[in-house]
Length: 297
Image (cartoon, rainbow, N blue to C red; front, side):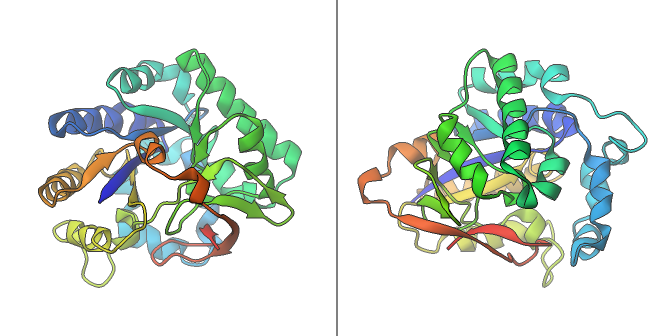
């Protein structure tokens, strides 16, 4: 089976510390990945307003957010100015592509997108996406081909704009297999490649799962049949830092089992596009994550 590796890079610290560690790890095992970068200011501290969201405090306690992100990061946008990631860490972004990995857009301002996009207008949505697009072009000198929404949050205008802005494929939702999206009265020919596997922060702290055995949970999920293969979303702030040994174990076991590890681009190139159908994007819950997420209907 093929397993696509999608790396969400949410913060400045994840960019300058987590990404280089992952580049070294992936080089050692000779595997490609897709890195989706947050490209604007790091305002992680503003996520504290989620305190009233059902399940948020439980997740914070269960996953030890402070130990993974660091207290300085949790102050960005509140007590400390948020560093502009693409400008301050542009060398890391370019190093990632130079190492042979696919690069794309995660968002401009991670917290603003994740907390507000679901209920925002087309004007607001296009402004945020254009900011990210322009920051990408400024950093890399050319246009992106892929995008993946922060926190699996979007609205009907997102899928429409992805097609209009020239993205070939996106990974904005959770689901089982690739599809062409429809959401309310909007549809798109920008293919959706959903995340199919659970993430580490959804598993840790549940049912006796800790750093010593969380890899087995992901491996078990990845052995379940998937029409075209699985997509695993990892985070530079987790698998690239404190949980790097877990990521190495996953790579070792996946390769030992004969799986082919690819980027989203590699995954996309294997798909029989003429056979893929249109499906609705709906809202639903994912165990271990607070709030509603965009799901394959």
